[in-house]
Image (cartoon, rainbow, N blue to C red; front, side, top):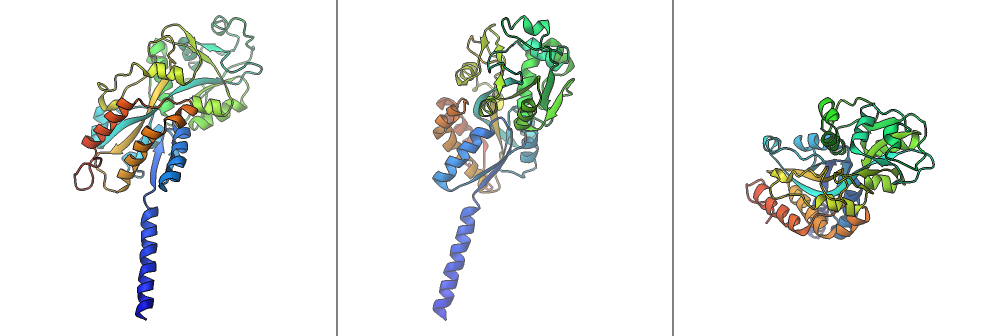
Length: 345
């Protein structure tokens, strides 16, 4: 009888241990921009450690709301929060990956990278001023490209979106009219267009609607074999999107002097720079009441140090090692456990 009781206790203890081991899985929500690389990192990390990461690709606005409500272990946003907003919410932020946003089009017979856009032309399309593909403003910068006389259908995000922030921040820098009438934010009062939810929704609309134009993170365009446009950068050069162009835009970022790591990388100088480049940020509470907070740091520590090749395969730009070290130092200072001791040592 005693032997049976001991066996029962051992089995119960083993089951309890197994349940505890499974409970280390972490949750996050937010930006759709980094979803392809977070998914790839999560798969590799689970194979290595057994720890899973459930990430909801719901848009930056949703990610900010969920981390503030403490319904996830971390939030993700492509728009960096201002220092005063971080302080008010008891949050810290750090960049995790860099990538680019590209204009995508549905124009029959025109190959990816063929159509050229300038910032002011894109702003006028999204303002509803340019309504036809054969408008003189487009044909002037596309000599030799047979643009149709079709109407332009504008596709934009319907949800709060960091990708929208990057897009509208860029348009605000290159078009005074856009800056005055619309401005830059994760959600704006769009003058024109139909709305899709997430990068996935915008991509789906553009794939279905002939003559449409939208904007998505480059990995989505590449993965879905979508036609994208070349863009004129600040130095007047027409460039194609790829990791080298995103890297060129990120090269001059001053992370040390950016409060809360909040560097914005749109419209950067440099002949090779892609004009709509941005970092995606992770948001965490300064005070971590649950053990999953440490698991989030372990995941991103591993990803930032070991996930570079996976990032490059998806045409993202991994963070440079000095910035990774700077982020780890910030964790030590800004993040505390339930007892008030440093979470990362």
